[in-house]
Image (cartoon, rainbow, N blue to C red; front, side, top):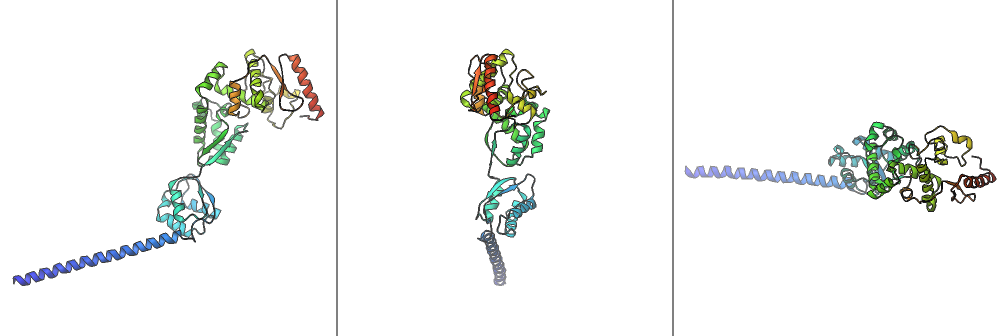
Length: 359
């Protein structure tokens, strides 16, 4: 009786052991099949017949979903085929983690490399080149060419008194905080982040030393930028910028009208003018320094950092006047008296007539 019970127990035990072995064998087979399938799919999605067929930039707009991304890829015809990319992206759950930006997809990249790049958010930055800008509209338009930020949004912010007040600026002088340079930014930089970046650059430029020099002139950094914009519009000859700055500083201190022709051109809004006529000097605008004393409300162009430094390091002298030289060299004749200045101006007017320059 005891022997039979032991035999029965051993039989049940062996049966259970056999079942467990079969289960693990089955599980192993399933695992091998799954791994083989995953390996095959990985190879399929990354073989030479898939991935990018050319180098191109892919722009993913803020708020885009996976379908928007696929539309962008299809429109640019970057990939050899999109079916495998779509499946692989979903396999790695990238379709749930879209990150905006500008990405460089290089020729020959596999689907895996592309998805990893897009998932990482490591976009290819852009160079934002800011110079030769006179108007807020020009700035908004130029920035929008480089960044995702909308030009209308940028312009609205540049004209928003309440928003600009946090920077101690206003719509008239806001361009004074733009320091001409080439800036590296992510393409999906918003209008708000762009202005924040410009403010940081402005604060870094205006060091304690520069602020001290501005204080010595009894001018704020904004006023120095405005004056520098006039100096730069008068001449691109760096060797005489400090002298020109000295003329305007002398006139400011004496309360004399600046009478800067570039401010009249700015007031008129016609930047093709080469010769300011007497009748144009009466245009009614706060930018017309023939009509209103002191500096205009804002800069008439973006002054370069070097020009701002030329103003801060202006040359002290007794000149109150200057006029372009009649040889059209770009240099100027300087004068202490109005009589002397009128002689210089007359020579330049005759030179303009000789070249038939009427406006």
